[in-house]
Length: 328
Image (cartoon, rainbow, N blue to C red):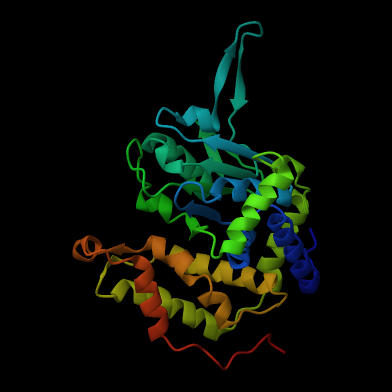
């Protein structure tokens, strides 16, 4: 599979974002972060209040990518077999037949993921980390690309099961849609609802790419984007500084550093560059690292937030300036 030229890939990224913005009224930076995480072959967690368009955004994004997509509405009674599938006895044939669950897709929309019990979340964790599932002892790979885009509500805790740190660490980024920033943006949401004449317009969204094209984008990120050693050192210092911060009990893991590197490379490609600059790191560092940080009990009770830790860490580390765009 041949990667794209960088300029061509950057133009395609713009088309993807514009395709989403035809329906979803929101921050372009947010859409770039979502696209960057998926191009880095990572999973995305949306956490925000009800009614802010999390599910709509994910559904529209899936349609625009043109990948095979399935959606799971997580509930407390959801079983692992409801996600990964199971073998069913077919009496007429005298054999077991495998019924594949919705996990066998390319983009899984996991709505209200924290409502699933731990055993079900563990089944999803294997798929997220290994890109495979195990059904009654048989391991089956998942088709590439495979990534999970999940949503959860931060204020309704009754009947929920908080995601364990091991699973949170598998999400490359944790994003928030947020409230509309201005009166004009909120009015635009109402105007579009009148124009659509329906609550869910995603069926009318036209794909911009398909699975093979998106795999080429992912390959372009992996093979065509140069990272100067000074950028690698910058990322390393940020990640290590989160572990020594006085308010932190557990800092960001090496997996967090890898995620930050991959997403920074994706952001460079989205901007039409074949090399990473410090701003590619800084624009995604909070969304990539904050959810991996566990504060001390005292600071948690005081209402201190991990995002503030990341902000302080980034501010304390000098930004590299003497960079080589590409060797030779």
